[in-house]
Image 1 (tube, rainbow, N blue to C red):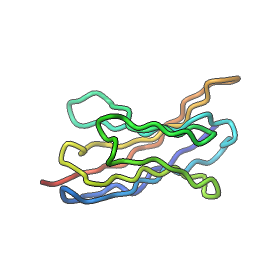
Image 2 (image 1 turned 90 degrees about the vertical axis):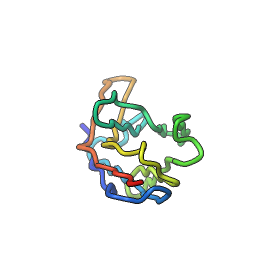
Image 3 (image 1 turned 60 degrees about the vertical axis):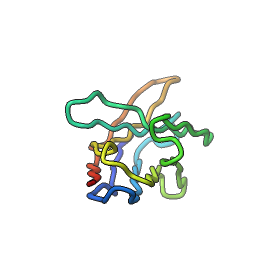
Image 4 (image 1 turned 135 degrees about the vertical axis):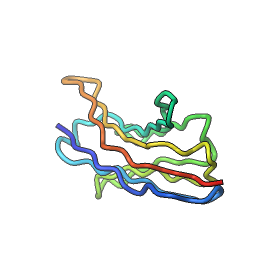
Length: 118
C-alpha cells in the first residue's frame, strides 16, 4: 500500500537542530494523515506530530514551540523540523501513514535515531 522511508537522524549537541524526512511511495493518495512518533529506551512510544491530507497540523505539548511538521507534496515527503533539541529528545523517531476511511491501514517506516548530547 504505502512505503515510508525516514532519514535525517543523527547526533547533535543540546540546543542544536535536525530535520527529519519521511518519504512516501505507493498509494499516496489514499493517505489521510501522517504522524511522527518517538520512542526512547525503556519508555513507551510517544506521538509527536501529525499533518493531515488537507494540511492541518498538530504538535505534542512536550515539543510545541520547538518542533514543526510540514510537507512537500511534490516530493511526497513530510518533515519534522526539530529546534532547540534537548537530551530528553533522544529517541528512535518513526513516521506512519494512516488511512481511516474505506480500506483503513497504518504503514510505518523503519525509523531513524536521534541522539542529543548534553
